Image 1 (tube, rainbow, N blue to C red):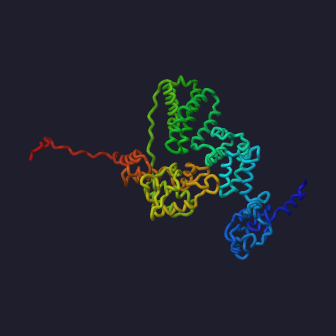
Image 2 (image 1 turned 120 degrees about the horizontal axis):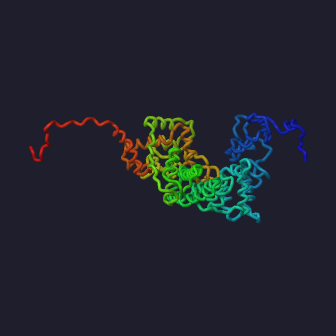
Image 3 (image 1 turned 60 degrees about the vertical axis):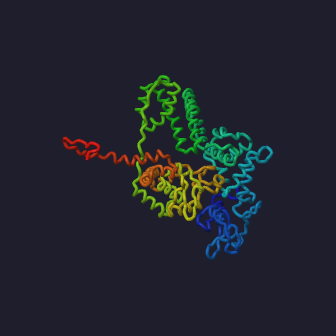
Amino acid sequence: MSPAYRTAEQYERWHKKRCARCGRFGCFAAAWPEGHVCRTCHDRALRIRGHCPGCGDNRALPGLRPTDRMPICAGCAGFTVSYLCSRCGHEGKLHRRRLCTRCTFADELADLLSDDTGLIRTELAPLAAHLLTMNAPLSGLCWLKHRKVRDRAPADLLAELGRGEIELTHEAFHILQPWRAAAHLEELLMACGTLPTADKQICAFERWMITHLATIADPGHARLIRQFAVWDVQPRLRARAARGPLSVGSRRGFTTQISQATRFLGWLAEHDLTLADCGQAAIDAWLVEHNAHARTSIRGFLLWCLANRLTRRFRLPTVVIGPASPMPQQQRIDLLGRLLTDPEPPLRSRVAAAIVLLYAQPVSRVVRLAVDDVILADDQVLLNLGEPPTPVPGPVAHLLLTWIDQRTNMNTATNRASRWLFPGRRAGQPMDPSTLSDLINALGVPSRPGRVGSLHQHVLELPAPVVADALGYHHKTTTRAAAQITAGWARYAVGPRPRKPKGWKPAATGDK
């Protein structure tokens, strides 16, 4: 069927108008009593809810009162069209078949997750229920259709789950593409109990490992790297995860070891050497050609090769790690004052930066704080960083409590009931430490020097073991920080010692 218009002029005349609210000229979404409105103003107006100042009903307020432009309900504004859902009666934006966003989202999930019988698979029913509980169903509806270039959309992965083409195992999700959508779906399945809970960083490592092995052209090198990963790296990774949640930095450290091992094998091949021929001369040549980061990252692989007698005997130089430079005390105080008084920066960044500067907490530990770690005791606010909980000064406490009431990333099914102090965009996960670190640095607060400067100030005022217990540090860390401060005095030149007079003898015991 040909369109109702014949020319571009006809299309513009029939389908484009100037918006009565924002003034832009373009395609309109509805004709309201005040005039035509564009899609943006239409959807924004339907999201406003509250008690109508005209009739007092609690409902959507898309209209505007002519006298003072106050939002009013559709009935008081004289709308001729109804925005009530034909199924549940909820008033808001309508989609096909005049259904609201939540009912449309429910139908989409039912179509995608259904099996041959037309019903949602029993194993996937918790996932559908979990997704439908989100406060912003429009975000879920947009997520289903999100697609990058030619990659499959999340809706395609859900449809394959519904048809049983994807097994409900972690290994099956590690080979799916696009990997970001697959990882997000895997975490949603863990959050609703369909998949067993696993550490997010271990899943990311195993997914990265599959991709990395596929890029190694030499089969012998790929086999050796796989053995190093399975026999050495993964056991260490899982042992660290058993002690506590893994950080992104820990996972990246292990992936860097494997990447450096792959480059080392390629370097040997370029110099017509094999791993069995590798001795002290080859090791020294490689260490000279590469920087300190590469020399540190390759140690794990070289020690593993030496322990399994894959190389000749050799010795590695001792690793020397220099202390980080602390932030001066006056600069730290000035930054804290700016965080507490300047309302322009985002509240999330200000709260995180204040915790770093005040309590010497690394960002990887800040993101693991929960709302339950903020304790209200009588008229005082405490932060549970160690034993006992640490008092929070009044201005910082006000900032912290305000942020708890305004936390972001809480409207979708990802973290709808999250207890994290800084919820992330992944199911059941806090913010990525690197993301929060970038937000802190954007405020002009260098996180690492600020943390070290705060720790040095604490060990100057209190004994190192007390600081370790209060801030959740190991006692060796605070003792080392105290030693670094006192070491500065040891570098001063020693003055001349007084000489004893010639013929002087010490007095004998008992002499008067």
